[in-house]
Length: 409
Image 1: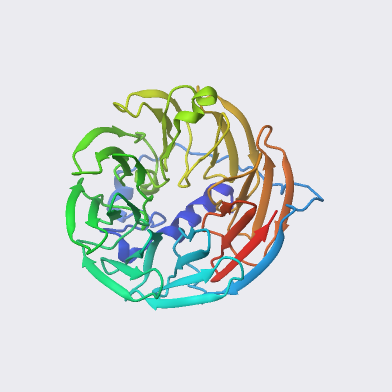
Image 2: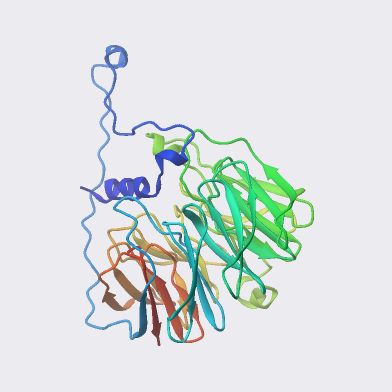
């Protein structure tokens, strides 16, 4: 099976039949009626087969395991636990495929409390000073007391929650399967505003966590639209569409912005130039936009469903072909590209001057942030689909087998 087919199956791994408004099998045979009208000699498409050679390094990542805690059962071959976890100064919060939300002690990994969400947790969790928030497949946002795990409120929405929530300014914001963004009052769950675009016929059961930037929240939809919305009232400030026309299959219709948006800070200006909003879609386009009006500063051919990482003047992506790619954040020029996987990569994260990335084959890989050279690799027994979290000198990993691990470096 060539890498293109592996990528298709990786995508199908993320698709949920129950989460799609319609579904057609992209491998289904042609009907008799259609075959009668087909030309006798249809043009042949030859897929380039690139043999994957695993990075050859005798070095490890240099990470030392501190603890490992079994949090949940394995969700099954074609399912995954929610990708977003939260690590605070004292605790770790995580939601599970089996409908539980758990709080662990950061130092020891000890389970502090576990609570039922009522249905499968989707997207992940968010935390403020008093509450933990989790969305469910049945279309509820649930708030738990941060200290005890007691359910504080439940708020029903129009469709399954597909993104992890984000909380700020007294609001909790998230996306649903029918292309709606909700803002609820974090204290009582009452709806404050809702923004929507028309739903798509074929979608991935998942969406990027909205990105808060002061009074603005950036949300990406399955249509390929990227909106800047007012946090106060949900009014659109500007919109850009990242869709790329063309394609040979139904999978090419998946144009959604499934990767989280990255916003550079004012302090990044010396290396990235003016403040920028960085976004990428599933089907071939990465862009840098002006936050004031959404004007495009640059664009680059790129396909990713993972949030990029800003490391100095490098914007680092993990793409759909197993590559880790660095672009110049200022101009969008490609700086280096290293293929590290024949599977599905997590988002890259900064670990000092290094880039850390993992995959669903259980590889944990570090690269030099300046050159892309592979510095070390460890093999874990668990598949990693959730993005690694780096805090201080620790790395936290949530595996798809339901294990949470802390490593120090």
